[in-house]
Amino acid sequence: MNLTRRGLMQSVAAPFLLQRRAAAPRRPNIVLVLAADFGAWMAGCYGNQEIRTPNIGRLADAGTRMAHCFACTPAEAPSRATLFTGRTPRRHGLEDAPEGVAQAPPALGNAAMISDLLAAAGYRCGLVGRWGLGSGRNPGHGFEYAAVLEGNPSENLQFSVNGSAVSENGFITEILTKYALDFLSRQQKEKPFFLAVSHPGAAPAPAGLPQRYLDMYRDARFASFGIQPAAPNAARGREYLDDPLPALRRSAAAATALDDHVGALHRKMLELGLFDNTLFVFTSVTGILLGQHGLWGGGRASTPVNMYEEAVRVPMIWSWPGRIPVQGVRPELVSLYDFLPSVCEAAGVEAPAGPALCGRSYLPLVMQRPLPKKQPWPDLVFGQYLDTEMARDKYYKLVVRESGQGPGELYDIRKDPRERVNVYNDPGFSTVRSALEKKLAAWRESCA
Image (tube, rainbow, N blue to C red; front, side):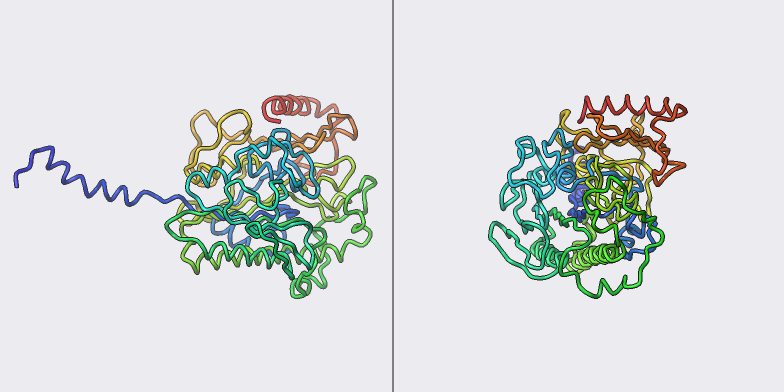
């Protein structure tokens, strides 16, 4: 057979080109376990030695955790909306919704969510658990499988499963695990999937908590928590502060039950052969105080609302075998509004353009890759809940209230990590205060 020079080169190159095409990485499956009322401080991998969370710890060992991740809003529904849309509450329109909403605000209903973007890219999307962002019994937004918890957790749980009403009896975490495993069992290796398991917040714990978890904490005293007597401005959850130990034991037991859920999902993915190409993320939409600062819940635990670290700092752990370094810890400050662009980059999906999104992908940080030149990570996050706003950098936290209802707050986080000394009116910190006020005003103008 006679070959031209071009033909010879093509015949030699063809196997290599085919090899490169075959080796192109598939889009990862994505499993998101989304807790509520679970602060970073509650997990063993973040330093807690009294609440048992071994599976979350193993997840952190198998990947990278962000040491300083913050919710934009210390309230469940607005924070979940921010995570799914990448928008701040004023941009998505859901600024407060203690029990969720039956009809999404127009801005939220029209916003592109993570699930919309992934579904358009060929992902099968599933939602299990709390939604609370409107859209009726079926969340829409690209979710083709939905087992949605309706109302508050109780022993008689009401779900909407793909549009049909279903009653369940048992403990909420175990029921959510059942539906999550059902979704995973339906998946095929050839097509990527996105599963979001959204746990409801509860204080001290939902009904039906199995006795085996309560037994783990029968004699626990939680001496390291720094529990304080009820603060004068204590509001939601104040009833637990007069005798906090029983409620603390139930909350710790519920956290360990959640940890078991993480382990069950991991085992199922290994069983199905889905583990190696799955990005597994564990985070929470809100923290919780559990007696610290003399308060119990999250932002609504006080009047006016608060932005204490325990209420706004949440876990953020990413594990992706072969792609994300193991036992990694990143010190940068990130926010839940950074989550959507980060997941989009991991999935090879373009995030929405325009001013509606204020976040930035931190995937290079998680993967230990260098950032683009002249684009350092800002190490500055912001928060907003109703008329209360926060600016937090590596050293200080500023909290201001637009209406003037309640004091301004400034904390030197390095020297006062538990935020006991408010230096807002201290002349020695006037320069710091002024600088953070300007940064907060700029963020408010551009993003909030």
